[in-house]
Structures are given as structure tokens and as C-alpha cells.
Image 1: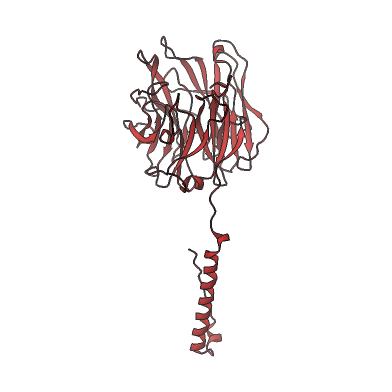
Image 2 (image 1 turned 90 degrees about the horizontal axis):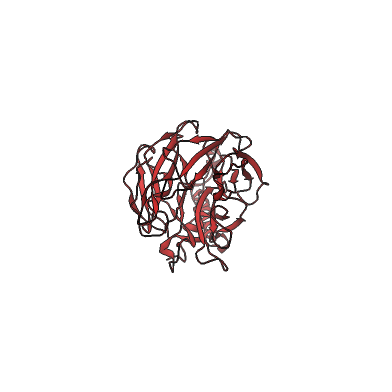
Length: 413
């Protein structure tokens, strides 16, 4: 409904000679005319809101991790890791590429080298980029020296580089101590209302004979000086191993700060759903984990807050699968919440396996960023769809989503 407001500004001296009846007739006539005008606007089909546009695939395998600077420029960073069998070999410097978009992700600059990880042993998987509120870019990477196995928990270090000039120059790589010897992929970093930057990582613990793998727990690390120094928080965030295939325990969490200042952690598990934990002291200590209502395979999610306060969550929604096969990572979905995560819309599919893909193809590992035109970019990995496409050399695709398309529940169950 549209409302028209009429305002009359009458000069008292000019109106003294006007009869009260004529003045009343004049006002009533204008009111009826304006009501008719307003009615014609609201009833006109051309002025009714149209359905929001569905997601659009904007990139196939040239971008990867995404973030958005305060000025609206979107940044993507990526690197191609070497063969993991080469971890003990001396290697040349390993470069990280960077690209920019100034039109909300529709077109991108050419690839440039942002910086290179030092020569030496170890294979780096990096490029996870994050823009803080001050405009600094933070890039994180994991240098693997040995994967975890029955004999030992693995050896990997977390590296951090920062740029204060939108990616033109970068600091030297600095190791971030997270208190343990090994972590897998890096999935989350968030900045709190007081400027604190928090990371959450999964690390290996005891070897589980019945699973033939090591259990995983979660540790958090935070910085109060834009990444100059880091402090270790809780490292006892656990989830009992479940029946789903894949690594056991608590893995690859994602985080968001809620409106009441608590930090919400959503954790990958093998229980057929995500678990969650909350921190009331800005990421230092965390509550005991509990199950969420998000049904999911053993795969991580992604979460982001829009400028209008709504939350978007992206994951492989098992509740929408017609048939479960293999790793259950074949379909990727999004949902939206207007009440800070208390309730969620029905999820909608944004990506899936395609004709010609192997049945056990992975369509997973979403990374989200907002754009200045009020949309969301989601990058995700397509792995195992054909020979040679591995986690070390994935196909990465990016879709652009209108949040109102997610919220529009016409046609959903």
C-alpha cells in the first residue's frame, strides 16, 4: 500500500477574503483527486514488484577466496598447491595471485602476484583472504610438511600476511601459533564489534582405531592488534564422532557474531547435522557443543551477515536430498534468517552435480562475501567430477545471489 501526504502552506493575509465554504470545498476536492492518484499507482501492474532474480554463475575456475573492502572493491586470492607427495622436497617460492572487481563481481582485473611464500620444504595451500573494517587485507595459508596418520598427528603451520594498501604490498609471512602441530583446511575468520579478529581451526588428537583416522577438536585464536600478535583461546571444543564417512570429530567451523555480542560457531560433524557452540567473552571460552537443526553431511558450511542485519547460511542441506549417495556433497543450498539465526527460511539450491560428473562429485566448501549492490558472492569447490580434479587442484566456481531471492519462498516446501 502506498500513502500520499498532502501539505498545505497558506498565507494568512491571502486567505482572509476566502469564504470558509469555498476553502472547505477546495480542500476536499484536492483530497479526492490525490486519493484517486494514489489508487492508480498501487493498482497499476507495471508498478508491482517482480520476483527477485535467481543465482547467476559469474566465474568458472579463475577465482577462489573472496572478500570485500570497505570501499566496495571485491578481492579474490588464489594459489595452486603442489603435489602433496612433494612435501619433503625443497621447493621454490610459492606465489599467491590476486584479482579485483569494481563492479560487484561481474568483471575482474588480470591475475597479479600478491606475494610468494618462502622457498623451502612444505606445500602451501593458501589465499584465504579477509578484509577487516579498517580496510586491511589479511591472507592466511597452511604450510603442510606431513599429513596426519596413525604414527604421528601431522605437521603443518598457519601463516599470516597483511596488506594495508588494498593488496599492493604485503608484510612478510608470519607464523600464527595455534598450540598444536597440525590443522587441515582453513575455513573461517571473523571480526567482532570491538575490532578483535578470531580464527577457529580443527586440529588432530588421538588416533581412533575403529575409524582408521585421528580425531579432530577445535581451537580458537584471536588478535586485538590487527594481526600483529595472536593469543590462543579454548582448544577443547569437541563433538563425538558420528557414523558419516570422512574425518571424525569437530571440524572446519565457521563463526558469526550475533546481535547480543555472543559469537556463534557452527561445526562440521559426522552426526548428520551441524553442531554449535557459543562464546560470551568474545571468543576466549566456548559453551559445550549441541546439535543444530541444520541437516548436513560431513562437510563445512559458510555464514555471513548482510548490511541490513539478515544472516545467510550456505551448506549441503541433506533435508532437501531426494537420494543419499557417497559423500552426500552433491548439492549446495542457502537459507536466510531475519531474526539473528533463531528461525530460517526454507533452503534453496544454488549448485549441484552436472551431466557427465561422477556420481560422487563434491560440490562443497562455500565461502561468502557481500557486495556493495546488496548481493552475495559464493565461491565453492567442485572436486572429483573428472580425473585430475582433486582437493589440491579443485575447480572453483562463483555464483552471485540476490538475498531477496532466498527470502522469496514462493514455490518452496
